[in-house]
Length: 110
Image (spheres, rainbow, N blue to C red):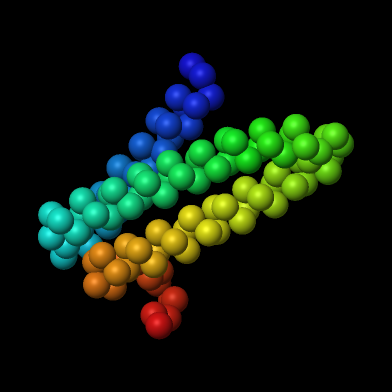
């Protein structure tokens, strides 16, 4: 099994897990809102994946040192993941009128 296929299967399994975990939240949404959230999720994941793939290739070509290149790649991955999470939360919040993002227990809502 190749690494991208394994990562894809793990992502799909996680999406199914989250879907079942928050089924009460999904019931509050219309079909159009659910479709909008799913399209947003897939779009943000796709854009982030492309940026990570081509960005890491660019960094490894531009920086000669392995350790420095790895550190910069790691920091870039963290920035991209945080930006993707914040973007998804903001867009999903607008699509669902605040139903998503789901707040954790003990976390104050804004």
